[in-house]
Length: 112
Image (cartoon, rainbow, N blue to C red; front, side, top):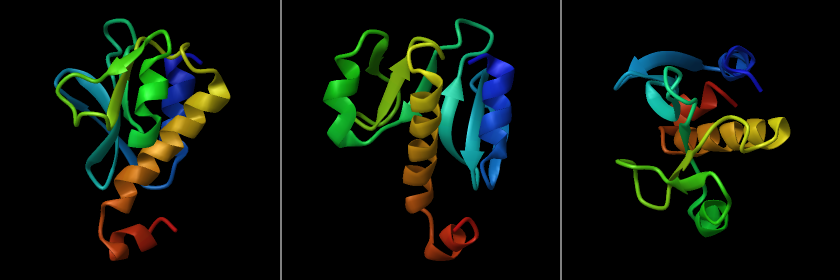
């Protein structure tokens, strides 16, 4: 998936906003980051993952622990092509859901 198509997809998710942090494009819900991508470099990105899946994910080529992010909760992926389009979308939705689940019930209800 190319970066523009990916960006459009992320912004189509309810409540998703974009912004720049540390020179990278971030996708957020309620100002809480669920995806960060280095668009000026190699399109490597970091995404929140289920800690139960961490070992299996990091065993795959092109995936490792995300630097400077919560251990075993964020992975760094070499580029958008590491996952096929279906898996990429599914992982983005899961990351967003994990971040949303940490917010108040009132905030969560806005996106139910």
